[in-house]
Image (tube, rainbow, N blue to C red; front, side, top):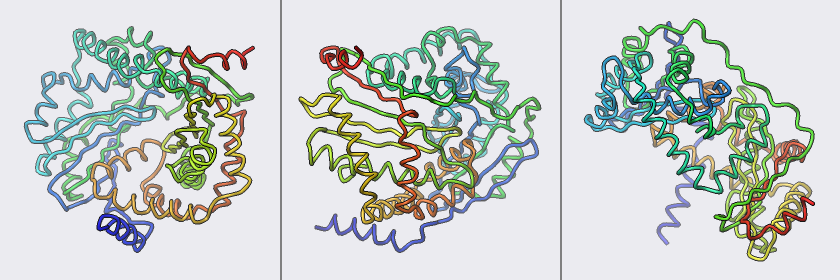
Length: 451
């Protein structure tokens, strides 16, 4: 009985704290346009340095898909002062770890080290911002690496291929319809010129956010940032971010994906949905609550109706992530029980959603979700990496520090009416893509709906 008691005590402790727990954040701008955010956390003598570029795969030039992720790999090669691989070897030798990641909207590089190693990390990271040295051998080697990564993560996974095709059907013109890792036929043609063109266009201090979190002093961080990053030249030709806009969707889109490797078929639907907007995060907050109410675990609405009451599904889910520069998606997923067809599963999903909109939000369930979110947000502050990620992701997707700090309050302020209003706005079939993933062995129902 002790563990459940401790869990409830933790929840009650979270409830006693304010919804908004401001982090110790200092921000400033270097003369060359680089934004710097310092998050103090003096509980352990460690620091996380992250450099976020306001450039991801959605900022690529058509025809070179995957070049943003390709360049991320290449930045671990040689610079004017470091041999290929020396960057990570130096981090490891100093007891730290490093890595990088690419998304549609940003590319980020980070190191976690002892606090007294921060200057060395800044020295190396600022060096590769402007001094990368690539050879044709680097290009050939790393191109094979990313192609193999695509083989393992996408080509060998029916689920990944299905999601990739479905996203392409959702975004006809916007670059969100192109996979971050790239289309394979374009990846094989990536060359030195493409990598350097992206590097020269986007890798500059005036297109970057430096986030330093941990056992640091803001004045000391400022001095180091000015010493290493402040001397780098800004890119005077950097243009405002502009992507091809998505045309108005006029009809529901449907797709059926067959793959003999599929062991468990399922139905999935995505709707175009608004992202978190600076100073106007209320709709996104309501969508977060909607996703939890509909599909956030075994106590959610879809689970109750489809898994327990009718037993038509073995799994249900609803997913929304508003951390996006442009419009994102709200997703529903149903994995049918054995002997339940995908059409039956889809019909049951639609009926359950319609019933939810008709009956409204369970106030007690909403209060429980808010309580859990408040506790989760407070506990997340124990990780300097999560804090650094929270601010870096926000600042590269159009949000501000004030938006990040206001977000917990915005979530807590969501009402039942807010949730139903945004649900009715988003759940429009003309804004949806419905997909069926199935094995070739169970394709009779697919034939029926396509005839």
